[in-house]
Length: 514
Image (cartoon, rainbow, N blue to C red; front, top):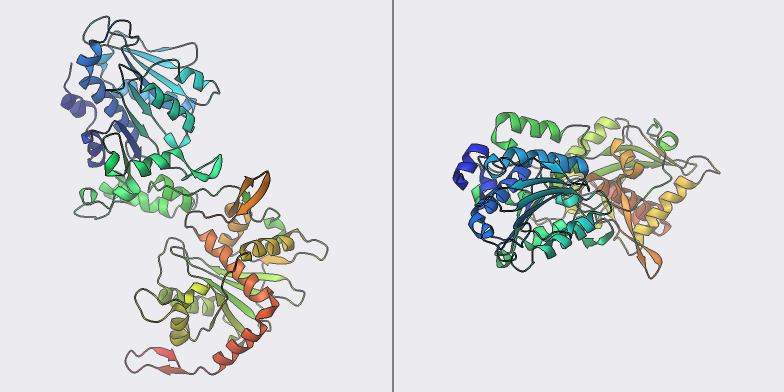
């Protein structure tokens, strides 16, 4: 029989992130890595290593233990099960199954008989998918020594629960183990958005050193910042394998800007990031692009509302007007996707964008409204964002605290306009506002949960993405423009703006407002 080192060299030469898994003494190992990071091969190699290390032990088990050693390999679909089966045959050393023909049993599970020390040793690998409803019966039919699982995020929680119980069988529990892998999916349970997904719960628990003897997890999105995974030339590696070559890094950047791959899918598949669920009902179910998208024009005679949301990663600025017929005209959007901008950088870009997009703008008819948190002082300066906008760019940002119920008010107001047809279309979105259109087409959703047989709406706290900030701009428009009690404050801010005078700062040479 080949030594573990020989198996590793001949069939599988592990990268640093894979070697860390094999060096761990944990009983259960969870690999939450991006696509193309070698997680399946790593898990199979872990099964080979464990199988080989225990040959002397399981071969000595009594003949009535049938099989003496059992490996269950589980996938969420039949196609993935077949791929896992192919990988097992390619990477599980042939010395262990020479003379044994792979078979498919009556229930569709692939089986492979393995050799031990003696000819009559009964070791077995079974590969099974959970796509059929009877998988529960199949998984509890055999005791198990090692569980190999691919795409854990797509496998039901009860499948792992059943197998975990089988791993605790007397006579097997001392040496049993598991290696589960999967590109991260959601943080929340699809059946109940208020609960953690079991894969995410395992990842969190497995990063606690106090439980490493039983469970340890490797979460690439976080691990890549650890010193042992930093590359001396490139620093932080976005992907554990692709980042190691020039061709791979170019592919990462191509996928980052690929119009056919959403930012959400890029973060999940390429960066290996767990995302919170955007599940439930679309916020705007009555939106139809064919009805509400128009090539509208800016009217210099009407007030222009510039709505600001200073998001963590995706700030958004929206440009609105109200027509005499009370139609909302959404004219432009500024959503710098994948750019972490400071508030001052955003302000500079917006001033330039406004001059370019609306060259005939009447500044006296411009009103800026936005996030109340802009009144807080920034981390790197003593002035607030609101003060910075006023002092450096002459922008008077009107803010209104978001109160309980404002989210529901915005939803009701917008959906009321989308559903209203008696007086014609009441929201018109310019086709240049592509992110806004996607947001309204269903990218932004809210959660619905049954509470005492009644539906309760929760604001969708989804992963950081541009649709949150776009929606917040609409919310500020409803709260600050549509609500009538803000008229006194509007007059006050207009008076403040009229008193501003532009000067050149002699220290910096920049234009400032005083």
